[in-house]
Image (cartoon, rainbow, N blue to C red):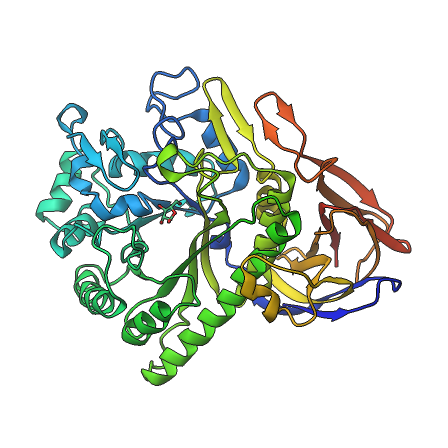
Length: 504
Ligand code: AHR
């Protein structure tokens, strides 16, 4: 958590980090990904047979290398909205026998050349080189649109069955003798949305999710079931939690932020997600109290399984949602990640939407990859913001103007601090302080209390202006590494993201 005192413009800002005050564990699953059958995410993103950059499975090696660098712990699949009409059995078995189907979420054609077995094979490749017992975890989203409970049970059996039963044997017949041990399963996706096939009312969904949970657990008691929430601030969240909190393990919420050309609204927008996390945590607590959930049931965490900067008008879903991210967007992503670290007590998983090409920090071209501006904060957080969130206090000036969403302004009593901050300490005692200077015009010299040593590592993401982008052959937004002697104040440059790192 970070507390905040607003100061006058002529006072010196101060950031105090108390590494001895560990507040909550940062779940490694916070740095999760998401691959959907949408645009060029799967086809042309992770799977590109025939391309010289792909391996013998057709998996893009440059994408695999990049995701290994990010140390992605879990990947959600196969959607998203795509799930609502996806029949997983279309995507298994001999490729030449798999049907092509009209795809109704993004209005394309699904060839089913990539399905469950290819996804699991891709995760195995991604997991190569990880220490024993560690792998990139699959997280599957069930079809609660046109799909049936029978189909969902069959999918769990196909993935996890160990007995001599039909779908477990089908997996074996398809060349996969060992169960995939898929632990994480989502009970549908955005079932509340008017764009969703078989959209439901909260009451209808809650009834169905409760019954599906019962059946799925009878089949496999070890799975983690994730309820479909809305954005954490909706009555949908309240209703479905009240009905299902006794039986589910996590509650999913989705938020995308964007604010047109306004840099300041863009970078403050993720603070609405912080509010949503706090509200969701309260709704969960309330539901647990009212439903008499036994204290022995582990905390119901939030699974923030879609988050990012996305303006669907700028990058429409049915046109592949390929955003070109600016420095401003990279700073918004850094604020998003600060939010997750500050609120780590409540976060069981978070998945940036998406992992490749579709609203993604990573783009493929025919000849290679492009790391967009938003790649850098994601990489730095995944590398350094690990372990525990530690107590931090900020004294700084603040932005008090209009926000996107509009309601956010009213909830920020003292405004949004110009320096948006989180801090962590890891197992080895390294303290990392993440600071986003959200101002487009002002550098801030700040005292950093609690920073230790004369050789503090500094990682800075910046560019000459907030509209800077990284595209093929052009890298305007980059990472600079340096050190700071810890003397006097540290200058956080305008529109920048900085991590200061020292040994406590
Ligand atoms: O990530 C893109 C889309 O955004 C997902 O398919 C959907 O769940 C959300 O609306």
